[in-house]
Image (cartoon, rainbow, N blue to C red; front, top):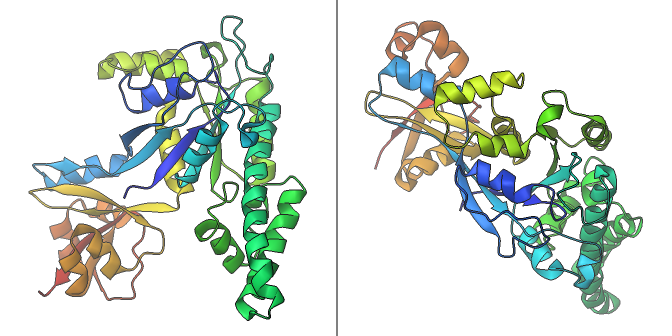
Length: 368
């Protein structure tokens, strides 16, 4: 299953416009009223990576295959969503299913587009969303705690340990703080429990998307600057984007697109940065397989060892793994071909314990 990023925010902040641009089609409806998006729309998006095209060009590959990431457009949230206001329960259930969150924040003034809170204030909007996620997480923790307390009282050792973990999480949430702000200080086992046992919402990796108007490109405005400061203090990534411009870029020829971007002082679409940042947020890296027939990008988690990376291509490759012939992209570019790299001894033979690095070009040896 593809790892997914949920596009989250209050109503009318530009979530669906951004999603439309991401999937290069008007798949999600956009309208100037809350709850236009009810069921989550899902789109699979190519991860922009110039390395893939460069390798394919140098290897004269007949075919190239990029790697992808999944985005989910989730209904807008309002105050008291955790109590069922608006589409609260649906909203929170859909967030539970994604692996990371892209929180879209309105950083533009427009009298023709209603703001559900009556004014533009992205930090207030962050806090509204966070409080709803925290309230839902606290409810989850307390329900689990009620069950475990009974077992702990009769001396169940595991239950006592779990109860301690639940108390740790509860103390953070009761202070109205998301778990993600405490990841550096929490033991790994507590974080894993919050993720895999409780499926807490505020433990998910999160990035902020400051959605500005076209007139505020490329540097942003007072609102987006506050978002970036807030993100920096929290230790979360942030990107600047103009969803309206990104949607305008849909369907344009390459030259027209480049000219329009240049007119706003941009080198590339903001979506490219958003996709790449989402990829990093999920702790993903890319390795490549290359040859005359095909050059392909593959997605794996950082820290994946060679046999498991081989298994991404085919389960037989993992079962019969012998070794991996590896050259990193930077070394490859210096010589310009796999064959030349082999001649110069730049292709290394790696075993089962080798962790694939971002940009590795790999040929797997296996025996069935």
